Length: 389
Image (tube, rainbow, N blue to C red):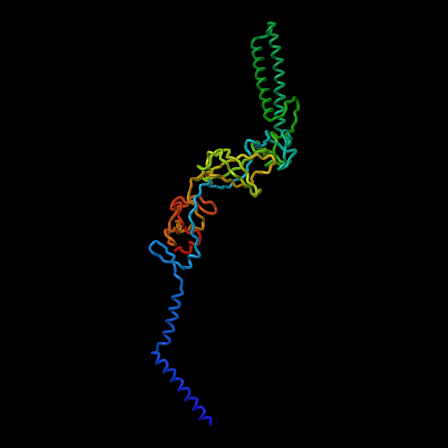
């Protein structure tokens, strides 16, 4: 066969094949492709699961809807246990057991015998102050004492002369007046030495004043240094606090003051002892609200014989507040909607409405509901966010 005859034969076969296909499509009415597409669409429509249905304010979840497998519906609980209100607090030294050590005279700190944090005993020397004012006080006492002795002798002579008829009455009266004034001046000088806290001596009293501890305790503040001059006698040189008993002060918001009373039991935990809870009672509630924080100070007395509670330690104070029985739901059931809080309430099997509620006290894992739910109601406690608009 020649090359031209080969190509002619194959061309005729191709034309016959095209004509056969066209005849087949004509016999099917030209709908073969359309029928195939429609069948696929119908099969897809039959296998698609049903979805959430909205009817007014109701949400219906039909049987077979995948959403049913992702929701957890439970009845609300009723909680009648006390509400636990936990507030920040701190450890403070008892002011009734705290002494600010001041020097009664100006002068130089000649010797400092303690350091910050030291424990001291009652009567223990703390510092020595070299003071010209102390020397002046002793000099005033010595002068007043000498004047007193001189006025006493003068009065005795005047009385003797007057008794013998040789002395004038006016001289006796003057001697009596001088003696009385000398007595007053001596008493004033003695009072000054007692105020300073030094013994009364005659002639050239010491210029060194020794400050001693008025009570046993710990040095919690120190503002003096050896060699420094002390000019302000109203400024404490140091503070000694007896820490055998301390206060834990809780800071109660103004809105919660009515829940706290004297004698109320509390549980206290400290950051330093996270595994321990200490029990105590409210010692007193302050009568004044702090103007800057709008909180009230509530103090709890704690015995502290081993010094484990140290001033300025942080604490958490838990108050048990009695409550009436109330509906309680987990936090996962609550949905925020603008400024409102809502839950999905079941009104029929797998039929829900969105119910606005008023939460009360939160408990960490949930909240009490003051308004909007009743005992026995069933709500979505998990997955409700999938139904939210």
